[in-house]
Length: 234
Length: 180
Image (tube, rainbow over all chains, first blue to last red):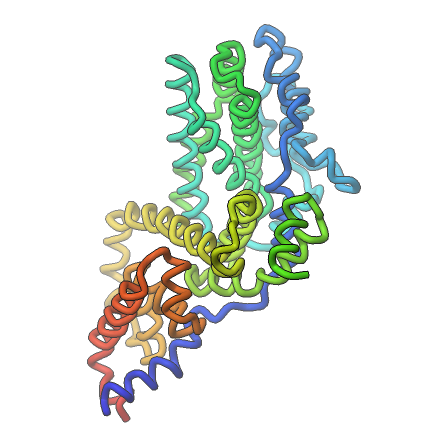
């Protein structure tokens, strides 16, 4: 009898456990479409095969292409604030405070919503895995070159990075958004490296590796990781 | 359009079919993700990632299971992996937060039975909680859970039994209330 009562209690009460609200269909679909955008191979190859001696003048264009990955193929979308940041930073460093209020499908959803603690932890976890990946990539690029599993891993991280760019994980945090956009570029380049079958091309891996250093991606990644971990405690 | 036609259309790059596939399944996927994550933000991320993965892997769908089961399997994998990442960071913060908790613990008001149940469900091991949520709340059968979780039917039943036992133990001091 007692067992039956407990079962009844569970049935009645457990149904309210994490009861979901209505699914935000359109918002999520917009994020899915962005995350699924494919890097145009020819465009990616064009900039990944650019020799690093041209970076001084080419980095802004490279970033503009990288940050606008696939977005150029989506008609009607306005230029992003971060495009402007990248274009205005020819030395390759993010312009502090340069992110304006322009709205895109990426940041529109995030503007009026603060990330929850759980999302900050998820973001920290994503950044942590990305840092690990880039460390592995850099070691491989200085050794025997990247293998196919590296490109596959990069693709997974690229999807996660793009989803976060359109989520409230970036709400009110322009530094995080710019970092994610840089990571998007680097990861897309690595994905293309695998897709184009030029894993052993040292010029291309060196280019990406140098890009990481030039943009101080690893340093900023670790700093942001620490920041996200700290925010997740509050 | 039946399941195989829809899959074929999606694989052919038909944008309308992609949206139809999404519309047909998003509520259930989001519901499952939300039940497991307990957080709107995370549920959205998990749902989006599940669909991205599904579109990537749809070419491998052979029709041996229902499309919804196949999609829910991807969803649960995404959710459990995602929650593992969150927990990893949460555990890292545990020591840092220990002092704060010691202070706040004294001022915590005893939660009611419903809240205690939800906390007890939260505290279940992920695989037990997943089976509990799917069976007791979302109405999946053990056979479906076994396919989604890639476990045996007997394992699903065992997880559910353990989940119930754990909840019962954790709520034992409220026995008089739920038995009344």
